[in-house]
Amino acid sequence: MTKLERLRLRYIQDPVPVRLGGLAANLARIASFSKNQGHRKVVSTILHESKWFVEWTAAQLEIQRTADLVELQMELVVWELQAHDRWEDETWRLTLAAKAERWSQRILDMSGLLG
Image (cartoon, rainbow, N blue to C red; front, side, top):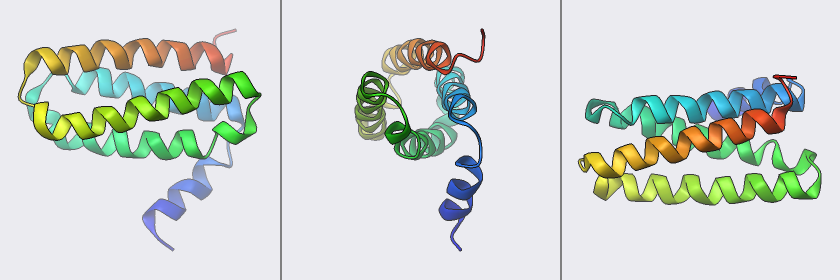
């Protein structure tokens, strides 16, 4: 069993709100780690993992929330691709951090975990 398959099996055991909370936490980590140039590898790993979290959750939501997660997944792909060429650009990283923070809050709100 691959590492990714083990992650998937663990992730899908949680109820959808908890999965969304995990995705929101990943986005908050992206926001935090992006502020430091030395965290390129960890951000790359979290971006990759987050795309899978979306994949494993979106189909279990109503259509509008699924559409929101598809929009997020497209953002994650763009961020991942741009990071290869723009990581050294502090302005770009800070913009990434701000966008990831907004998405984190949006997904956390979607989860309903805060009441």
